[in-house]
Image (cartoon, rainbow, N blue to C red; front, side):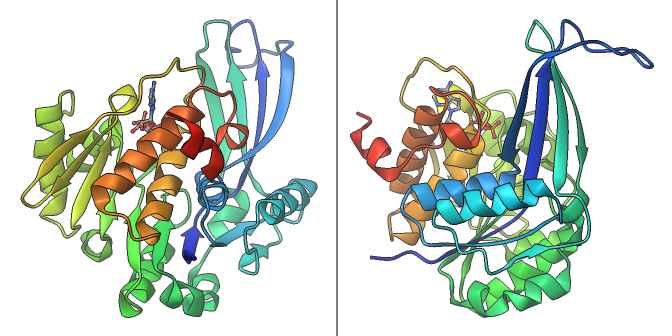
Length: 302
Ligand code: ADP
């Protein structure tokens, strides 16, 4: 069975280094362990879908710089269709990251090319969106284009999954178009303006989102797995217990795995079980893209 997934979202290049402490204004400090890594929630989720067995079309914008060359070849190597990854006259989205000795970080993000993902670029991919079984999006690219893509998906009977990260106010028109929304606890708290510190509060806040349109809210709970909230059921699905090393790409792996399993026709609860296993495996490894497992690895994991 082949899946047909469109991931629409950001493509970034992350530049990080370790410093003894976060530099103060006007200060220059020497750092160590400089690293360049590809990222962006859109790209990470597209790679997660591809590694986990999905047939993926990525709709995104990269710049006209060397980071874009590296990004495009990484996506192609993962088997992703990049026909709708546009090169624009800007810098590829970038994050500059300082990490201090205690693990605390300080990050500046320039959206760069991601801000060029406008209606015309979404329209160019409309046939692919209409023909896909699932459309997976996040919030690192302009919201009006995300809403436009969700409208195209509705017209074509494509199911839309929105990972509302990073959290920001969402137009009610967008929420009404989405089938499944997948916030983590802090995103759910921001989206609903309510505290989310327990499973009861998470279910209560999730119901507020359900009232605005989605069929299901999947709240990711870190090491505790995920809570699946639909109109008449609340189901907690535990994650396998693992020794966590680095949780950087956990949410992206979860969303990619969830989408692939749903596109393969699995039930929502089975898809969440698969997503928990894939994400738990990702936290046992360092890095973002480097930590995302393949289907074979997830199947062999317990
Ligand atoms: P985000 O990474 O977006 O903040 P979460 O922290 O909720 O989101 O993690 C997403 C998913 O990753 C969880 O639902 C779970 O499946 C998995 N996960 C995260 N942390 C752990 C952990 N320590 N052990 C096992 N699974 C984890």
